[in-house]
Image (cartoon, rainbow, N blue to C red; front, side, top):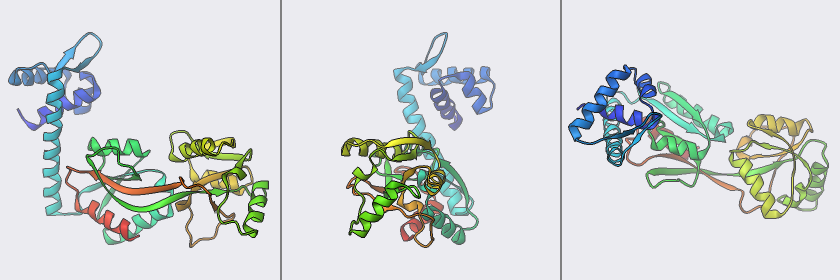
Length: 300
């Protein structure tokens, strides 16, 4: 037995197909099949249940894969910690990012980090919080910047800031005029009822913003006239600037030191606060580059 044997079994288990696993592992399928039989003989178990169409784990196989993943995780930690000891800047930092990547705070974070550590290489992945946390657990990411809560006790985290949703009324719209009058009369936050039947552009399904808009409509018992969907915050803002439709964005999208074509306003909603954290797997060695990113994120 060697470390690759554990990698072979876990790869087959993940892909559910020996042919696909052999291709990913860059070995011949017959060789991989023979190696699986050898491992099963060593442990006197049947790891996989085979039929004409697929391959799946037996009860013994589930147990084997659980410990195989732990062994591979320990081996990976060993490699990364030794590499960190020799040269902290030679490790590639794999970062998962949610829609926070559209934020001016993210730009500041990466800029400040790069100024202090110009030798670090980044590998970015974008996705929703659930997917990113899954990728932390399966070892595909070192850290992720995403929304709380953490979905597993195996995930550690450090909260770095709070964000909130804000209303961006379309230029020259009746909603914009209504809000201007409201602010002149002393209004501080915008009642959700103001949004009733107004033309809107919102984020596509599967995003935190989309879920918020749906939940807020139900909570306040109103309906938005949603005419457009998008996956890009800049496009939604452009639609508002062009007068096509109003939108709802993250406050962190806007840099308070810059001037924008149209204003944005906080919504009168107690449930629009978002807690954003840097997350990592509890039992995984956190390389020095990741620790530095967390430090700089807290400072920013």
